[in-house]
Length: 125
Image 1 (tube, rainbow, N blue to C red):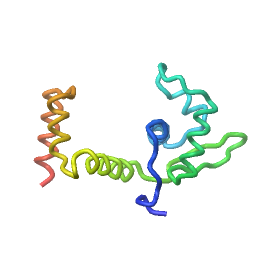
Image 2 (image 1 turned 60 degrees about the horizontal axis):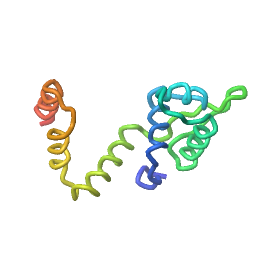
Image 3 (image 1 turned 135 degrees about the vertical axis):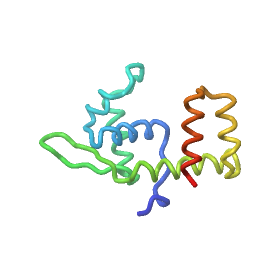
């Protein structure tokens, strides 16, 4: 199954997937422990979300003792690229300039952020 064949993920699933990517691998308890303190998600819900991500093809797991240890089956950069591309296509007809313009005008973009973007653009080509 290619990345294009993978079903989309919900915002809650993406939050869990991001935590697995950040930690390289994680048990259900480790994901629960790494959730923001204000995020009230139960152990059972995290377990369900991890299983869904596995069924969708984004994660795999190994059994170590009694614990299921989940790890990425899909590369972070590829999933981000596809997700952002889908978002830009849906909201802006594929043109990224209105998105960047919106973020510059309404987001919390600092002068340092703008300088980083200049460097990225300069080094791109």
